[in-house]
Amino acid sequence: MAANLLDFDLEGLAAFCDGLGEKRFRATQLFRWIHQKGAGDFAQMSDLAKSLRDKLAGAAQIKPLGVISEHTSADGTVKWLFDVGNGDAVETVFIPEDGRGTLCLSSQAGCAVGCRFCSTGHQGFSRNLTTGEILAQLWHAEHHLRPRLGLAAGERAVTNVVMMGMGEPLQNYAALVPALRVMLDDHGYGLSRRRVTVSTSGVVPMIDRLRDDCPVALAVSLHAPDDALRDSLVPLNRKYPLAQLLAACKRYLDTAPRDFITFEYCMLDGVNDSLAQADALVRLVRQSGVACKFNLIPFNPFPASGLSCTPRARVLAFAQRLQDAGLVTTVRKTRGDDIDAACGQLAGEVQDRTRIGERMRRIPIVVTQPAQGV
Ligand code: SAH
Ligand code: SF4
Image (cartoon, rainbow, N blue to C red):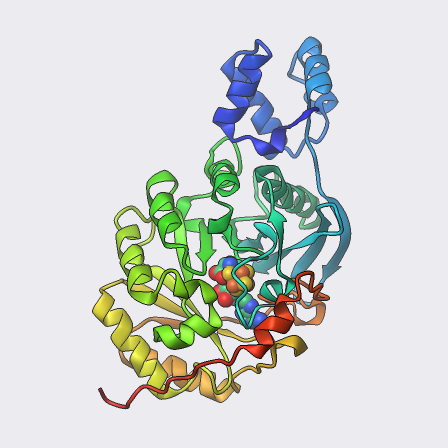
């Protein structure tokens, strides 16, 4: 079977070219054609010898993902639904802001973590994406957006990548790391480590591996100030409780490109949003000694969750409480509302393969209200 060249980082491509009897600089040329110029066809690669192009055409392919749908929001947000075969689809979202373009990528079809408030979690897990499938989302977005946005030569549509689409990236580590390397490579997308963010629900051993293998900006989905509540919202917490998770965050900062961890906190009405819980959160992160910033995410409700979003005024009061305690806190703007592109809404019409959603709704959420002023 023809190798998919989107599966390779530059080292991998060099090894592949070596196998074809080609020198390393040919691999670099090929890599630049694919990732910088968006070539999908070897015939386009005009500075490669015809003999090499023919050899490649027999042994390799640049495999795009089929587009099921594309929607553009009134605010410029673009959402693609890509076909990854066997009835599975993943979503990718582009969010333009002043001077930057953030692309939110999926890492898995479905997700095995099964967070209570996440529509992907309610779908159950189907499979890991390959490196090629992770990168095909970026490749497609970058090279389709450039002409559409009327960018000058050398300008990039995607300036930031966040692994915040469907799936838990640190449960697909082997495919994730080469994809990150291509994003960072000067011959690839040339993004700085600070502009590539991996978001995780807290896979502690893999946070440590990422720290050594490919440190990029890290976002950790916290969602609760204590283990009892976090156990019921993010089931992975039973395996890696808060003390272990925060210790891993602290270790991560040794090599991280940013000097803080971003803690994401999805605001759920009556569940994790009281001021007493904000105070407990302050104590938790202070004790841990992890330099951090908070990003409060208004919950995107979906019927099967049985949960609702904290009213705006209380989101702001919670944010203020963290700010007053000296924690830098932002409230995520919701974008692309008219096309259902907001975070956590990525599954679109939820396909519940494993009936995990049904099982989840039967498990009660444990809300422990911490004592005030302790
Ligand atoms: N699995 C990783 C990355 C993908 S989820 C993680 O959990 O971090 C990306 C972010 O979207 C996470 O912070 C997640 O908690 C949040 N999220 C999931 N469902 C959501 C929803 N319905 N509303 C708002 N945010 C949600
Ligand atoms: Fe998976 Fe992240 Fe959704 Fe949790 S929030 S189910 S880890 S995608």
